[in-house]
Amino acid sequence: MIEFYMAPLIGVFFTVAVYLILSRAVIQMLLGITILGNGVNLLIFTLGRITREVPPIVPQGLKQPLQDIANPLPQALILTAIVIGFALFTFLLILGYRAYQELDADDTNNMRLAEPTGKTKPPLSY
Image (cartoon, rainbow, N blue to C red):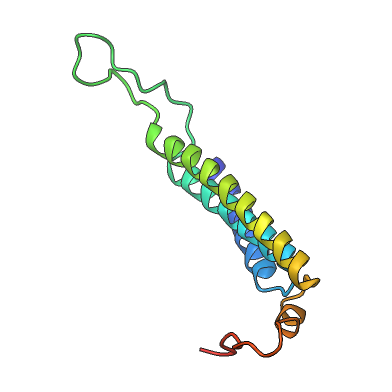
């Protein structure tokens, strides 16, 4: 039942993330990547079925549990993804700050204009 309410919330996370990633400001792109990671975590958590099951512990002497148990895999994946997402956020934050210090610009178009003259230019299209 709760999955019914989580689906629109995940859609909002993905929509806001795409909107922010497509902006020209570096900080907004960074926040968009972070929100996208949180949306993916929420999606994995929801796909793992949100239930009030018992802990995944098999009693001694049995080869399988007596009743339905909670699935620990989505929770383990999300915990790992949270740590990796925080490390990525920190790295991108420092990278954006250094780019701002060097180029004195937060807008990607202004960053392109702030490139040093006389050196090879980055590709303008692919």
